Amino acid sequence: MNAPRYKIPVSTLIIIFTPDLDVLLLERADFPGYWQSVTGSQELGETLAATARRELREETGIDAAAYGGLVDWKTSNDFDIYPRWRHRYPPGTSVNTEHVFGLAVPKAVPVRLAPREHLRHLWLPWREAAAKCFSWTNRAAIESLPNRARDSTRSAACSDG
Image 1 (cartoon, rainbow, N blue to C red):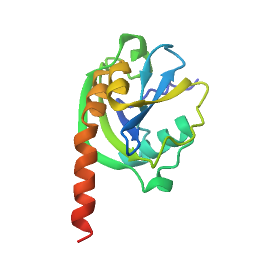
Image 2 (tube, rainbow, N blue to C red; image 1 turned 180 degrees about the vertical axis):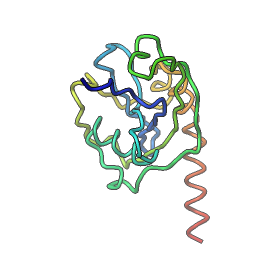
Image 3 (cartoon, helix red, strand yellow; image 1 turned 45 degrees about the vertical axis):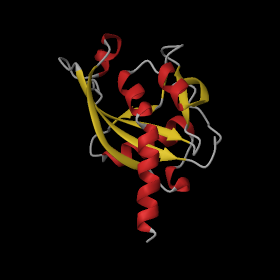
Image 4 (cartoon, rainbow, N blue to C red; image 1 turned 135 degrees about the horizontal axis):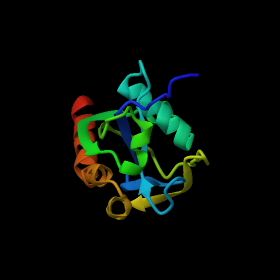
């Protein structure tokens, strides 16, 4: 008999957004009514960027490379794992570290949901998206979006030179 395969308590959160700061949210299949951005656990031997790219592709069908790639926001948050999901982690594990990435898309792009993971998706203005998220880390990441988008524009302008 095989030993149980537990999740690693390290994950990525990917904020997908348009130039107008509309944000993609997904409704969880295992927790209807709870909305979030793309998120998922790191797998053994995988980099954080590879985790983010894989989760984005699995949960939405979006290929980050088609839009210039993911940006590591160099932000991480530790949060208590909801008791209902702790059985997925090694015994005694109660905290997860989440690393935030962003993906700018030119408009609300088509989404192909993983039906076992999500029921529906929405593109919402950033303030509405933040308010709809059940996770405080997800809310905080979306609330930082206006500054992050502005900083990205400045960086691009400076690098053009």
